Image (cartoon, rainbow, N blue to C red; front, side, top):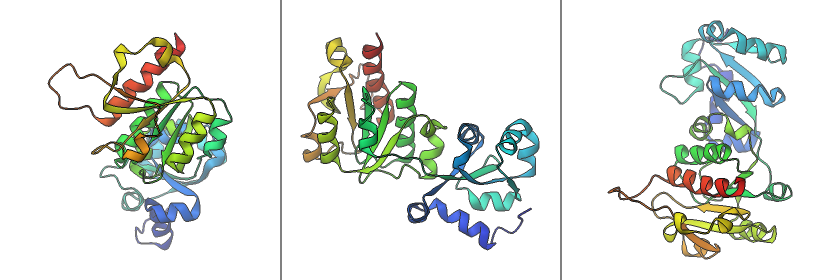
Length: 264
């Protein structure tokens, strides 16, 4: 059992909480039981698995799955686990996992009908929740543009609750090049803004077409150059007194509007 939170091995794994280490190694940290459940469907992605004795005892069936997949569980003390996680109350398990992103070209080669494009979204919780919503809505992919939060940030990973293993996603995509490629692949591009055409007033046939939704920065939306790339600006109406909608909430509504129309 690893008991020294300052051991070189522990420090090496903990470095994966930083983007530079993730970029260099091609690995990331996957914390929590739900993430472990999801990644065990793709066990070859798991490089290392750390857990406390209490966690293993309480989740025997889950760790038996890991054992049957030939994944060795390294037992650690509570202090060591806390050193490996960035949560205040970790769930007792963290895995070191290979990164799983693909290229924009790979995504477009599958003839997608619904894509979420995250443009300069900086909040990890928002980014992860949009990816999770895209998964729930049956979207084909998610694209993170340059200057967006790192998709492998531990907070992003946790907020996806495993959805990052369900649909392909690309990272560090150039906005102009990406939109040009999306349009060339036959998709229309909608930018979610506060001033756009209201979703309830849009024709169902417009929403049913293959679509890439662009979602901008939480504070200031899109820069002029990126907004100009869109075919159309679209808005979620606010019927109550709220000043605005949370980005992830608005993104969920937009994605589901297309999903409803495309699956009708």
